[in-house]
Amino acid sequence: MSEPEKQRDPSAEPVWERKLIERLALESVVEQRRKRRWGIFFKLVGFAYLGVLLFALVDWSALFSQAEHRKHTALVELSGVIAPGAEASAESVMASLQSAFEDKNTQGVILRINSPGGSPVQSGIINDEMNRLRAMYPNVPLYAVVEDICASGGYYVAVAADRIYVDKASIVGSIGVLMEGFGFTGLMDKLGVERRLLTAGENKGFLDPFSPQDEGHRVHARELLGDVHQQFIDVVRKGRGERLKESPDMFSGLMWSGTRSIELGLADDLGSVEFVAREVVKAADIVDFTQRQNLAERFAKQFGADVGESVAGAFSRIGLR
Image 1 (cartoon, rainbow, N blue to C red):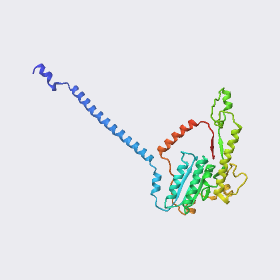
Image 2 (image 1 turned 45 degrees about the horizontal axis):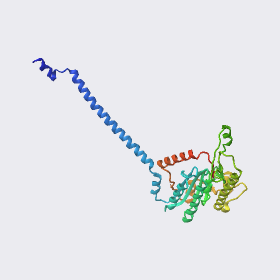
Image 3 (image 1 turned 45 degrees about the vertical axis):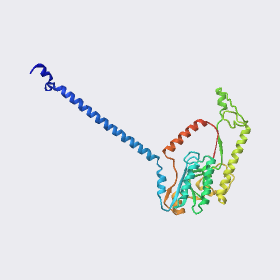
Image 4 (image 1 turned 180 degrees about the horizontal axis):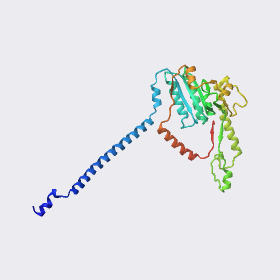
């Protein structure tokens, strides 16, 4: 065999070159398989994340509540500050109460309250709706059960119930109204900051925190507070009726223990949600009709609230707190 023919003979190629080629080919196949496996893994993770997100967005409590077909006591929660867009907003509480009363198997409704108060407007709307529902469904009693605190706007709501039950250590009362804010004029003087406020309307800068307090504005603010306070007092008197044992400090904004609130006629008796359902309504099975915000709603409203707070700054607010 000639020298050129030997060079073309594959069998004459060095062994290490064939092994290198084979190893490179094998590693290429392994790398492709590895990429395929990681691709499948990330797809599964994505599907799992989507599944968890969808699960969080579903209001399961509402679905389960609708699935109940036995005689029961309906429960609605009012927890936290009563304010627009909050869990304890008038919109949310009203919708929950309406669902509870509309269910044909509801034997009685319990509004469980744990609130320090909040907006007088939101509290008034809930109070009006409770009275409307009681008139529409006269055979379905509505009871308020107080846990830790039922103060100010929370109590404004509670007095619309047929009866109010408390724990002996509950905090009840605070029948008053406040308007709060800050005055920064002294600080501005020290910092050498000049306030430049232009208005169209002599009272448009009402209670501006960066201007000296105007005596006329202060008097008008107290009249405004007195008006809302009287509305609160009228609602309490209407809701509690002859059970109320008025004292000079009853409407002063003071709060009392659950035991003392019963003595004053602000509440009726001691009792928990379970006790009222079992012993008063006579339907021990409790179904929660509270309409809670899902994950997306909570995020959207919290984002909006954060933006609103950053814009609002230190302006005065009126509240039943």
